[in-house]
Amino acid sequence: MSKPHVLVARAVFPETISKLEQHFEVESNPGDETWSKAQFIQKLKGKQGVFTTGSERIDAEVLDACPELRICANMAVGFNNFDVDAMTAHGVLGTNAPDVLTETTADFGFALLMATARRITESEHYLRAGKWTKWSFDMFAGSDIHGSTLGIIGMGRIGQGIARRGAHGFGMKVIYHNRSRLDASLEAACKASYVGKEELLGTADHVVLVVPYSPASHHTIGAAELALMKPTATLVNVARGGIVDDAALAVALRERRIAAAGLDVFEGEPKVHPDLLTVPNVVLTPHIASATIPTRRAMADLASDNLIGFLTTGKALTPVNPQVLAAR
Ligand code: GLV
Image 1 (cartoon, protein in one colour):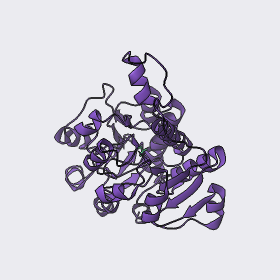
Image 2 (cartoon, rainbow, N blue to C red; image 1 turned 45 degrees about the horizontal axis):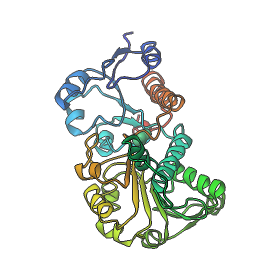
Image 3 (cartoon, rainbow, N blue to C red; image 1 turned 120 degrees about the vertical axis):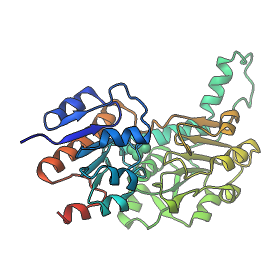
Image 4 (cartoon, rainbow, N blue to C red; image 1 turned 135 degrees about the vertical axis):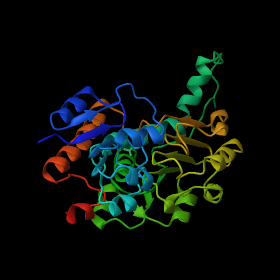
């Protein structure tokens, strides 16, 4: 019997390719070339599976052009690159990579929060530019993390990880807003209290966004929400580009309507809104919240295991549209 054909859309660990090659005919992209949508479709034609990274859009156009496709396995917990309804309608399974990145991403969320509140990169740039000629009493004075109020919007696994770090490690008061309230036991573990979004924005010293992207969460933070925040507050986005209106944020930062922001994700990334590049009070990182080698390996393994499981036994570990499995 011939092996199923699988496309790996981006460069990944060589071990991931070897693992997939034990089960599939694999076409990979070791040079990490940027393919146009037409090139992607061309390569995907005739393949039963695709290993995606969150950058490749799977929509009706792709699905119509690739009728042999049965599974798209994302090496990312977020899957807003999938048109899940179109995939389900085409009988194509989507899988994501949850859990394995939770603690690493929560570590990063906290690192970005601290770098932002304590002005780490802004002060480093100053030093590297040779501007540090003497110490002064208020040089790069930031805001405290310990004992402050942490507001988390999006209290899934990663949000809870950030809450635990804040509450248990730094004695922060944690408030959160989420589509649904957590069970009392989870709230107790995170020492977190549920509040409305407006109350959170008006009360928190530090607001961290960990909400998944969907049309409903587009611009969760725009000019109106920024206006509710304290002028001393920081905002951190480790969720997705598009959750924050980056243009409105740049204005709020420039006018010091909030103190600072830390952003790992951007609208239209890898492009970054030019105004964000010119304001000093923002820490910018290139979508690296899950980037440690053990975690990226675990994410690649989970995406591969989903491809192998589904295409060899019809089972998948982390489906995002399990109706496709049920319908088989
Ligand atoms: C990263 O952004 C992910 O969704 O895993």
